Image 1 (tube, rainbow, N blue to C red):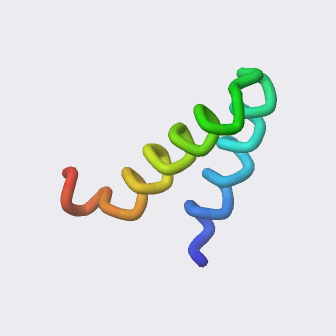
Image 2 (cartoon, helix red, strand yellow):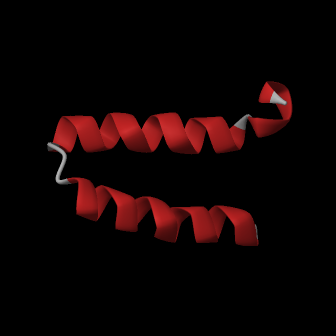
Length: 44
């Protein structure tokens, strides 16, 4: 795991905790965020 991914996980968890989303919406937000990071070279 690289440092960027570890840091993004902390930021994502903080944002999700503050957002008060349902479990389903939290899972969707997590997948969108982490999926974008996983494929960021292809997105750029």
